Length: 433
Image (cartoon, rainbow, N blue to C red):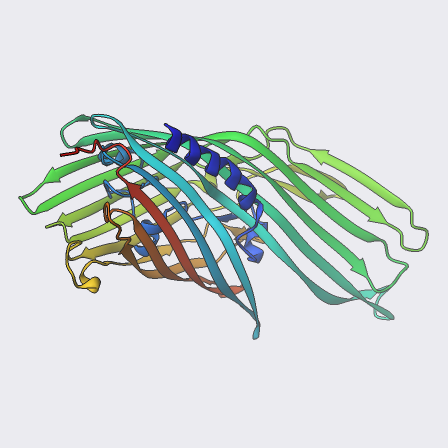
């Protein structure tokens, strides 16, 4: 129990690390921010594959039903970080940005026969951007021109501290649930200034402070096709609901000449929500060497509302609005090849992984669909050898993600993910001869 307590304390101390934003994307200004992968190191080598995976030496929190497969002799502790370089392109102009992020910290253990438990801290969304643009506008017809500067900035995100249980009530069938405390602060601002001091500046400040919950259910069925082949079908259901938050909007108008400021504040009770999500996946295991799978995920963002500030007939209003998002569909294909963990040839002990994904846009920007997402990854699982066991694994993967749009900014991100899985025989009974 001391080791479990230490793991819980490490998870608690890691909360501060999640305050650092893992993105510079302008797209994170919309909705609740840029969606996080919510996968661990071994999943990311297969580009996030996971609904049908059942591992006894890795925590697959993408589907809580998989916890029932955890090894009874070990306590698994897994933590991951990432670093990325992103290239932004719009109208022939290119810029680069760098980020490093603490991704997740999770643990898992066997509670009882056919029952496993997992807990951890993982991100849900990230917000982080800072940019500006300028336009020349006419004042009083064509006689006077002034430069208008719009500055956009935002930071924050949502995080989830989860506790999950997986149980196998019948041979081949497993069910599970993740219950999470979902929280975070999101701050966004838009500042409009003019080169002409006679024109008032206008600033908009949006603030959300969320303290809610998130619940995800999972199920898996494993069918043994032969002595060497196993087919696993998995599915998850994420509960959509309102977040019991009251988003604020503050509008500040300032006269640069007189320095007179006028402030208006708006609030919407229970104005934010997360969508219902559904995931299904297949995984084929062959001869303890091959794992090949496919996942599909649907997030029903089109059924959610989002608060929007606007001026209608010269009357300002801040209200919940439909049609701000579209349903997000994501397809992932991936796999792993593993030769022999006891081989003296180092390269035969590695776990080789690769995967590809495609996701439709869920953002609507000025009434138009946002960027499509294409991604590909490849990675390794490197065993950590010591005098006691070779169960611990260093997971390293490289991922390329393209946010592609004919209308808006294009993003190309190259990301390195590093996850370290400690898997020691903490619960084994040693026999002394």
